[in-house]
Length: 408
Image (spheres, rainbow, N blue to C red):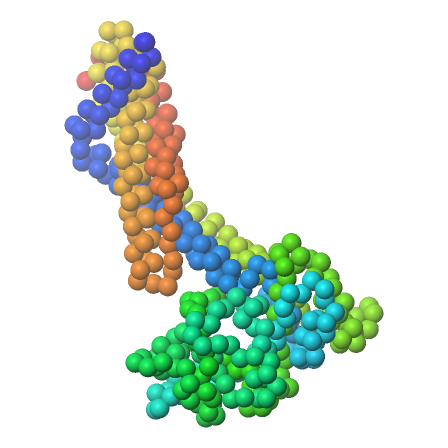
């Protein structure tokens, strides 16, 4: 019962003290709020980037292996990968024939060129040549028309499938199906339009133009290296399939025993690991800045509380003389420190997350506001107040009642 009275009385006195010193309270809250706002703005932006990256990484497929001449993440020895022999369609055919885990296999080449329709020009588009299984491996859907078939490829038909943005730009008021567009000056008949994907790892696949690989090779040459995509039943099959593909590729490329692989097998988690290393360092630096700001705010709280103890020394002496216990005095000053810090934390949380949201609206950076982040902001600020309020509270409780009553 006595403890509950101490708590209620301590809270009442703390609220009264904060109300009586409004300017001091506002300035102290501001110091904590700036630290919390800085920290949570950074956390919100990084959480948003993580969510956006994970979503984009999923478009690569969680159960797809990519066989290419060079790895996605290169550690300074790019010249070694540049001099490797190119991969060809025959390697994709070898994987399709010899890898029992492969559900579908596709090969892709790419080039940059202009696309036009009746005078409307889209320069510098990514022109991709594929084998017929590309939509199955990549997870794309054709929302209008169809994708090209092996028959189209064998006959080298001049057909094209457009990305969503290309179709929308060139055919604002009409259907693209059956129309003739020029790809690099060559006429192609539009037979399909792909579903919209949005940006993926700083590129926009909705601006891609897709040709049968044979037609692509006839126009741009077929001696360049292909990228091979291999779809597996589940993500659990990645390791086994990778072992199988390594053996198939070494045989197909006649790599002697003891020699290193002259190809790379890429997996989405490689990009995820690199991204986590980069953002981990960024988060550490930015979080350190926020914590330093909070430390300054906490020192400000401790300073103000020490001033408050000095100003109320006589009041403390009177209360101790009337029978107030040390724990009552401690509770009073701790409540005051925690309350001013929590108020600053709440305001800082609102400002920080609001700032992160504004940044996401006016810049390419994403931001995500999670409920736990809000609770973390207020709770962390209150903890700062509790930590930095311990010494002033202990100093107030340990004042000698007689000396405190003599204080002017």
